[in-house]
Length: 410
Ligand code: PMP
Image (tube, rainbow, N blue to C red; front, side, top):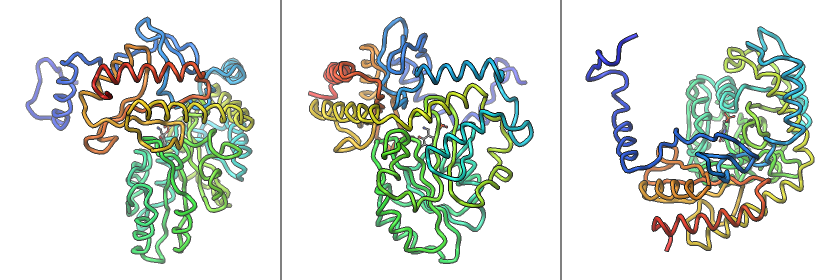
């Protein structure tokens, strides 16, 4: 170990971060609160926490269905902790499968109506593992330019040729597919809901364009669609009626399911071989018993959650309308999902309004480049089925106060 105090080289492997460090320091010098200093000292419910002694409405959790405090879910986790211990301490390939892993995969198979389900330690690892294992050297991955980082990282790990098409453009997708060698094997990766702006993909049109070409398999990431879209809550691909055309669905337990973990479901007859060849599955520890027990319970409850889905839609529509009426520019013209993104073009103003909201008692996510396009700053709101009508009205009022105080709205 080098001693930082005595050995400070002018240039080392951290030098590339100097511009970012300088930008961050300049921002903090203006009095902005460091996001990493914000600690939720108590979490009271899926929608409320105590931050710095102040009760705060949570509007940036992705806890769409509010399952984190569901009494059955919490009880299942406690029971598994008592009966199976705190962790598995290794990979399922070596240490073995616990009953809870089998149960959560059975719950997923039932939820999605598929023959296979494979659980990963996170959704990030599910994309990393599935994409890199399916498509390797000599294969092609065709993906939306706005794809999640885990999709991009899966592409890089697998060494396939990457072809990007313009976000949600069926025309660009068709054009790029037409240029690829017909005999090459291809994986098209789509998302049901794109989490930056909260817009959804035109999947039937995309599937029709893809089916013009041979040797294409389709993977849809439904991280932000699970629980909320479709008659069974499977995702946008179910809502839009393209279930039979999708080869793989990737998802996460960290949003509607309310815990942590990731998965891939499929009807492919050879899918189970993935358990032996997928490195981000083989070479990492499996989820703890308490986590898989909470996930299995939550997934089974989400099969019968149409009332929650209806309330979540109501919340999303009301917030979209309220913010539009106030004069904010939003990521979508109409509410398309449970994510409502307020678009700002000035970093200082975005930070000021984010901080002002926090002081008023509202926590939202702030996203900035490189996660967003250059010059775009987002205050990303994610609604929860447990937000009450009153809370949504309070949220709109807080945006009005913060927006006016910072000059973001007139
Ligand atoms: N895919 C998408 C589209 C996501 O937004 C996320 C997380 N934000 C993931 C995958 C990764 O999920 P996890 O949090 O379970 O790693």
